[in-house]
Image (cartoon, rainbow over all chains, first blue to last red; front, top):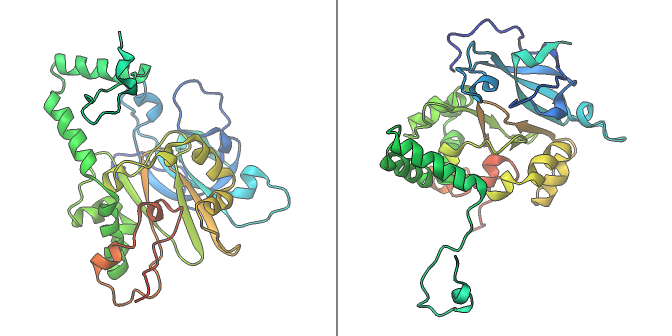
Length: 100
Length: 213
């Protein structure tokens, strides 16, 4: 893991988190379909350079923490009348997350 | 500029010609490459070596990793804990950037990998991704209707199995460890590796079932 010089992660495994619904211009790595959705931290990956800075020639520092966040498929898409345990897991940087 | 007289000439001695029109992005990439070489940032030989290295990587590398994980539980544990370090034990160098995350399919949980934003793929372990992996259709549909998409690939999962779609949006590259097929108890690593296909390591199918003998 390249997280040795990271700030302390704000969230831990199992924490409920909501993805910010931000109308952010430019290069982002947070897909629209999970924005505004609530999930749970599945794994703390460590700290990685911020792609929103790297994409424009920046150094990506300070490194934000990156999390694998688990969403219930049914919460994301609200399918009619189909209950399932299926899940979507997405890597999300810390500045996109808030406690839920 | 182009002479199209050769278009109908199918004689085996017709000169091979690259009639492909370069797209805007291909021309832009070529221009940037030419500038980088001209300014001495990279050499043409370094570019060639990088392409050669990429082309030498195939799903057979990943299959070797999976076969080892099937026969060696301690290796599997290391692979799940730190994919990059574990594949390095088998001589696979994933380069400076990749963080490899292995996930295990079982009879209760089935992982399938996508990159909805572009085409992130564990290239250093599996080689270049298949065209369908990069298609808008796969990328947009597998998150919405994973079971339907898997069915199109010929994989129908029991409703009790939990499907987990992994969207590799960032620095992680995901490698699926498919379930070891039944009837392979006495197989050696090389025999097992032959059952591990590219698609089974993306998670759109299972490992191949051995032919009955």
